[in-house]
Length: 197
Image 1 (tube, one colour):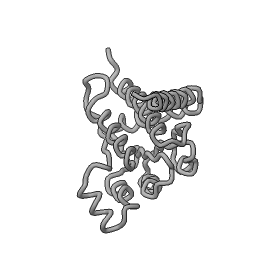
Image 2 (tube, one colour):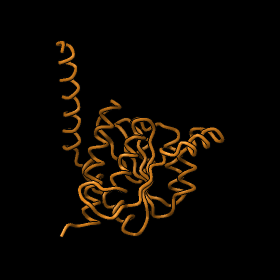
Image 3 (tube, one colour):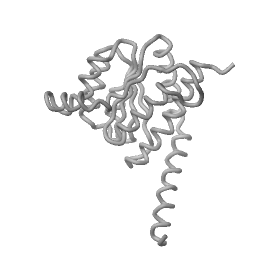
Image 4 (spheres, helix red, strand yellow):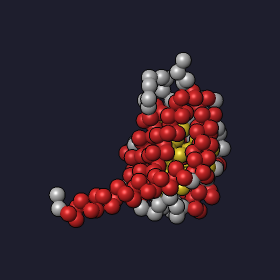
């Protein structure tokens, strides 16, 4: 491995670690994550579900989070109802073709969402048109809307009931923080719904 590669790898990992350290030191970030745990716990305990949406890498993150709920995270327990709105190619392409890509999540939220459900939306920029439309649709359906974005996504954050702001403007670093936070949130929800005796 060349010296330049070594330095670039070290620099990237250092930046990643610094961003995670910033999130840990941010009391508002920690408190908001706790409120998200409470919102998801209350919804699932009441028989409601979680819908998730994102584009690109955030679509992968949405699917990852849904898998932690519906399958399992730390231990065997009953499945929890969570649906990533990013996985059905027929639905995505039909809506994109017939109505426009900006409505691919909005129409799914309007068709599948119910009062008391939680909608989790992920956008590193906070500017994705289809995510912003999904947020409005979630509110129209009486859902609790939870956002995951970066430090520049303040407008998106203001539109959500709860929003986690990763302290970065770098897309891959933001996504790393989102998944670190999502793992602890999923784990705490799992623990509260299925306490180990």
